[in-house]
Length: 511
Ligand code: AHR
Image (cartoon, rainbow, N blue to C red; front, side):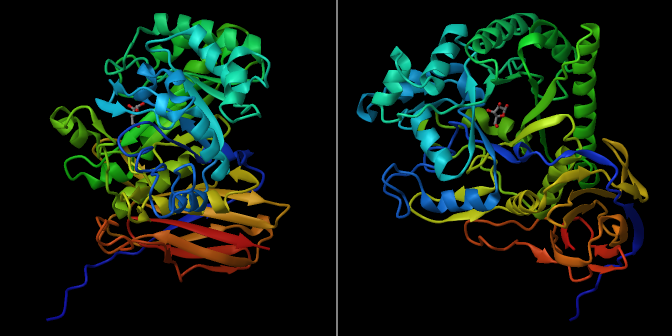
């Protein structure tokens, strides 16, 4: 019996890429990620002594290779909620002397077998920049200064000499520092009001800048745009800390709810709203102070996360376990399309988003999964990230997009197609990233790239599947991968390409 083919209605869109409409240079820090002491991100994730691919320090070589292929830049560490109860001193020195503690954020056991020195080594292996968070939940200015001395002072002081004695003669030179984590969230150990946090962050930041004015400090913004204090929190916190901080953080997670795929596919509209609101709050404080200093956004947690599912089972998880399987979402094609759209949105706003961290990197809401003693593999979300990170270079261009829209329950009318482009004049290369949010229509797109001087389609790949809920699972690790889009043709400066329904596509163009 032959299967009935669903009717696919073809529609069109026009995109114009103008090299004069530059948003900002491509900033590698947009391709950051996040390693938290949570579940199996560190233990049995990046670190598993005894694994067949592990090196002498216990780092899994297969994970290192996948992280390099993913193309991440800055890695935020060690949390997340975890940092608000963390004593960094527990994680340095001889491993056998390190204490085992309770981690209140995730109700797990923390063995401290990985700490800042191990993380620094791992960052070297993966060619990543370290981004460190200090604990402002249960600790304060002194402990932040101590950690700064330990990591960044060359030698000749109590704590820097301790680092040297622990096997790291060179300072780590960490530039980016987060001043706590999600301090507005009632779930945060030591959560506080915007006024209290703003004052503490300001004191910590100015003390850290006394040590090194070149540090780049991130003050906590809201933990989501649905917090009742969203907007006002940012304004209050910056009114206290404006002079000594450089970034304000944004955190956003998206999920499909109640089968409403249409709204889910338009999630990046919420990210746009989030960015606009935080920029407005930051600029309000700037203008009130008649300052020419512009606060940038550090979007240091973003992803698809089925948070409702986690909230429903959180209380039932075995407590005080070592490396428990927590928040190991398995991502579908639709998730990857939304994810690719979120990354595209961050690039589009890179005039104000100066840093971003995909939360997280391994096992926990992650593009990379591992089994203890076994394989490591790529989730569907791995592909939009790795391809975008590899192709984006030069400057970000905001294309003009003419396309129809569709109605969503959550975000109002959403354009059917979203796009961003990058252009590297020196290399004679460009890239166009495209998303088709339609659930039933392939869209024929005409992309005018005539002003870029490119002549060849070097590659056109994307994420798409007849089954939008297809996933890579432990039993079928390569079910979903990149699919070549054979329809891409470049003639006389015009790229024509047909985007399948629910798809994310990247086209690399060369001169
Ligand atoms: O990324 C998982 C958690 O989400 C982080 O620990 C926290 O900052 C956020 O709520």
